[in-house]
Length: 410
Image 1 (cartoon, one colour):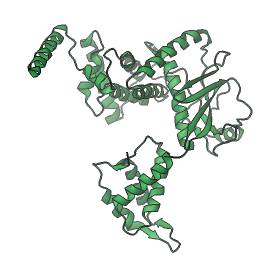
Image 2 (image 1 turned 30 degrees about the vertical axis):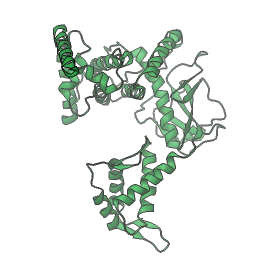
Image 3 (image 1 turned 120 degrees about the vertical axis):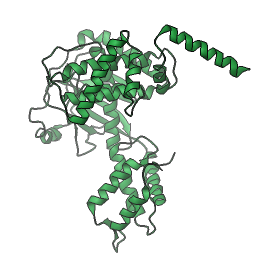
Image 4 (image 1 turned 90 degrees about the vertical axis):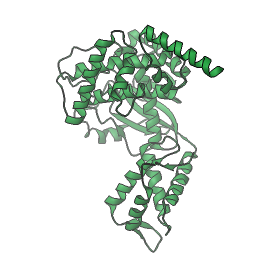
């Protein structure tokens, strides 16, 4: 599949804007005389083009910049030409041979002898109490300490994620997604069914197993792969590390069960993405952000993205027993979501609302993991939630379907 224009955008408007500010120097180098307008064009291009493969945002930006500077050297600049150059640059990137990297991060658990390594999502994660000497982070820590005035964690376990990728940013994104997937399963184990009676509005994440704030990228020999470091923008301060050693065997058994279900899922990619979104939502210190991310995940798991609120609630209710009561709770949560978005409203009880919403998210995750209807796609599994919950209504529908089957079989 090649890159393609999305129908709701008009590429000719972007082309004419680029032509109006393009200047070709004597050496053939292209410059743009209006940098603000140029950056606007880049932003619109990123949204108006369907790329042929999942790429990081940074890699997409590089591809578009490269393609534009190639395309704008030609006098007859057209949308077709821009798309051709983007497709060419994208293909060149995709066909690159992946390199081996190691991302170094930390995680808020106490290291113990049983915590060694695991393979997940094409990456291998190794855990250490002390960072191997060849992965020297000292120069990055020296710079980063100014960005984290409350200090970096000193007793978090280290995580080294071995990953294959075509660029530094792709390596970091893939490595963190694999680490977040395993964190998602572990936090799901501890969070599921939990409830908090903490003080109102307490600014503390729901998750107990969090990422550390600093990530550095290295080659397998330990040398830095980049002069940059990556960080968690929501980091506030170190939290108490969680001791999971006493529950390790139980946790590993639970993890194995979840991973087996994920591996056997007909829509594994969507489910793994759901667990990553789940853990990242509950990592949030800003609780309103956590709430909105959870509501977005409910829409994703019910396949009702796009403001189909009544259908969202109806599909969630399929999994509930006392439906009239839960309908009231979900209506209250939906109204809070709307007030939060449209009127920037925050309740002192936001932490309570997060735990209410979390309960429904976890129910949907369990439903999709079990997939008792053997649905081939997430959309099919979600559409089953539209069926009646009343036994008599279900029997009536079955009767109608059988009659319709006989009619069309004649």
